[in-house]
Image (cartoon, rainbow, N blue to C red; front, side, top):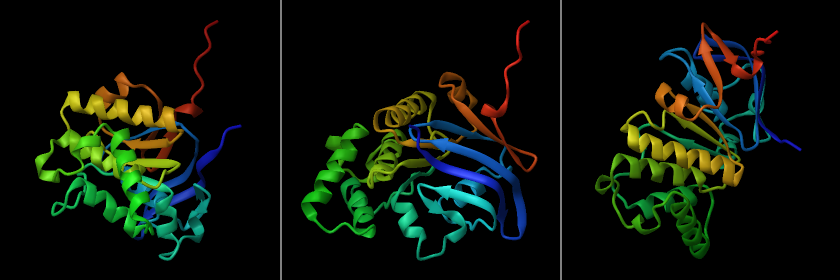
Length: 232
């Protein structure tokens, strides 16, 4: 039986007092890989920020990994984010500490205390992204692709049901983008983690076709809602 991990119904997405997207309706199931596409300024980031609690949902209904977005407040947001992984385009790693210490910082910030369990978890996520031997490195000693893998490892720390990825291949060359895409698709298939990935990169989309949500003229168009023409 499928499990719905993201659902928006009749949702209006605001940035401040500006209505960015209206009447947004879609749901994402466990283990699904979905692209979020659209021109710059059409609301992709605002939609992602609403899903991870940075922007409030004022109108319509929304549920992410069992959390009601209409009920979100500053006290509840950390609990929502413990069940989500967020991957950024610019990595957002702490430059003054090693990869291992970057990951440990996040675990401590989300309530982990047992040193042995933290150590096991960090090694586990580094293993999953192919960086088991790189925990001692500083971010500036790593390539862009390696830093993005650390970012993905960080997103996996709390075994999230959903990863929201904002342009994760945006700063990478084509070969490295390919590696990151294969890693994300593997995570969705292997661990049943749903991934919603905002991207401009149609080379990536064409190479790894999947369901698409498109932000356009204040709406979100779901490729699943189109019916294929019948051949008579």
